[in-house]
Length: 112
Length: 119
Image (cartoon, rainbow over all chains, first blue to last red; front, side):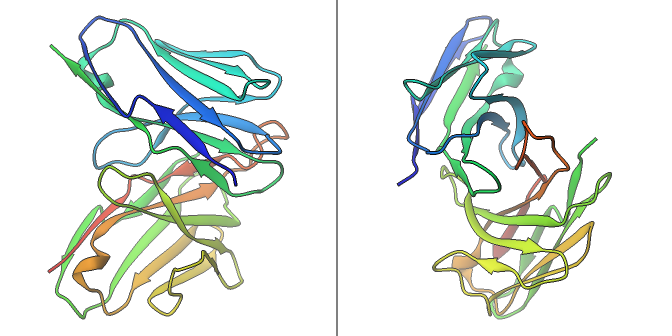
């Protein structure tokens, strides 16, 4: 069964600090992995997308890594801002037009 | 590019009434759109896949007669919640499969969501 597990479930950090969110998946065959940011009451917005051949992808203060061998990904947020407070969702796509597998997300709260 | 809109952004209705939610791809054509439901602190759950010009494909456990989906054009899909009940209250999110590339195949662009509250 395809699964995506994220940790931690929630996280509180002080403004300006860095943090790393984790994603483990068992989706096979694997095509690509995406990280989304979802603000409360809004739809998910794409941060990064990585295929199996990519190890890292950056988008501003967001840096995602992917280890296709261990089936693990991380999202590192640098110099956090209050606006980073949101749910971060890891989504894995199998080959072709297969259904996406969603993680439950990590709820991040950046405190002043 | 790749913007998806939803309307309305929130709606409150009485139990037993029907509610229609629209999903539009604003700057690209989407032959396939998806409807998700999200309960508080839960992940998105796929309800159905909507294909332009054909019947929608529903996930197991989703009542197709209750959640009517119409995808009449390449830029518009609608979800109608019929005879809504309080347990249908949720956050409904649509997405549209983008034109993509070989490497970003199956990429979906999400709408902002619609908050439905059934009294």
